[in-house]
Length: 128
Ligand SMILES: [Zn+2]
Image (cartoon, rainbow, N blue to C red):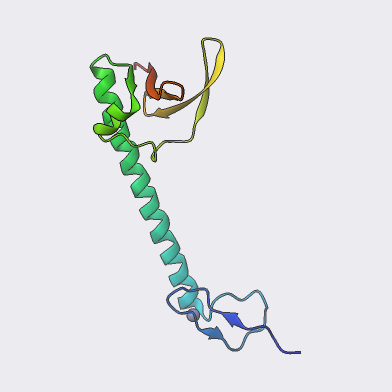
């Protein structure tokens, strides 16, 4: 029986793996395995950094407003300051006025996006 054709999963190699024993083989050699891992981590890091920078920027804008005593502002106005809803942390649920409400938290600032008014509402700023 002919073995199926296996292609090395190292993106920068992509060679056919000519001789192999196990059908689970994914790389031609250790170099390719390690290099593929390296490339994967590189991409993950880039995404992580991009997210981190976006969150930092959002925090800066929220902080700017909360420090000025503004706890409710239209989204487009925040966006003018650099706020970007592409970079939001995982939502958390808080009880607000007896209702479970989806919020986001960046550092000490907890906020939500009111979809009806399209406003960002800063719910709580924790004080240490
Ligand atoms: Zn390879």
